[in-house]
Structure formats: C-alpha cells, structure tokens
Length: 165
Image (cartoon, rainbow, N blue to C red; front, side, top):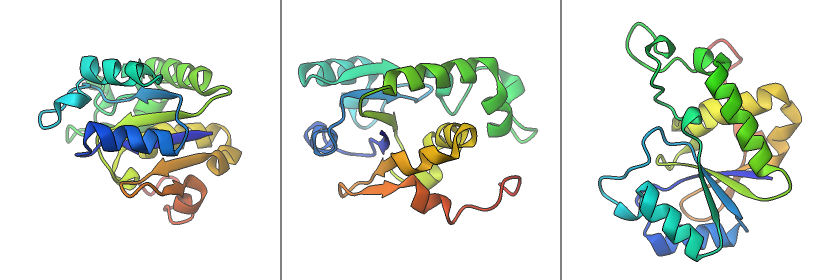
C-alpha cells in the first residue's frame, strides 16, 4: 500500500501520530526543496532525525519534486509541465526508486500541501503510477489532516479525462 501526506502546518507530534495511525514504515519526501519556513521540524535534516528516532525510514526523492531544475520541463508561462516531467529520465528513475522503497511495506509520499488535489504528489507522482498500472488506484490512499485516508480510486472518479488538465 502507498500513502501520500502533506505535512501542512502539523506539529511534529501530530505528524508522527498520523504516521503511526496508518502504520507508515518509510517516508518518501518528494519536495524539490525539503525546507519549511514556518515549521523547522520539516526541514530535511530535522525531519530525517525525527523519523529515525521513531523507527521510520526517510528518503528524499528529489527527482519526483514538483519544481524540476531542468528549464525544459516548464511551459511557456513558467509553470511545471507535468506531462513533460513524467516522461523525463530523471523522473522515471525516481518513480522506480519509489516502487522499490514501497515494495512490501507502507510508504508515505510526503509533500507540503495538505490537499492531494492541489499537489504534485497526486497530480504527477500518483498519476504516473496509476497510468502505468490502473489497478494501483485501489492501493493508494491520501492521509488527510483529520487522520482519515482518502482512497485514490474515489478521488480519481472525479478527475477530468486525460488531456483536459
């Protein structure tokens, strides 16, 4: 099973509680820049230490970030082009690393945005995974602020058809 989670403005204690509630064994950080201006416990080094102290593995998958370094992966307006990004070699390698990490254990894909419908962790990473294997939608859940797990299969029912994004 794969989960996604936006750290939002959670306290460290609440964040750990959400991970425990869902049995998360590893966190795959897909933030392009793993920093947080308002919540220092979500800076890469601090988060890595916090998770380690609680028996949760931390992996930074920079190539799955929503703001790539390659200027060719942006549209003419300067916005990240998810279609181009999903086809890039670096992204594909990052996706393979995520699949290996998630093989046989519960992994949470982490970004900062609470709402998965407004975050690249769903709109890019999860879409790429389910594009390869649509059956995965039944095994992916988005941990929400209140602790509920929203099924990707449920969210996907309301998505526009491909090509209309």
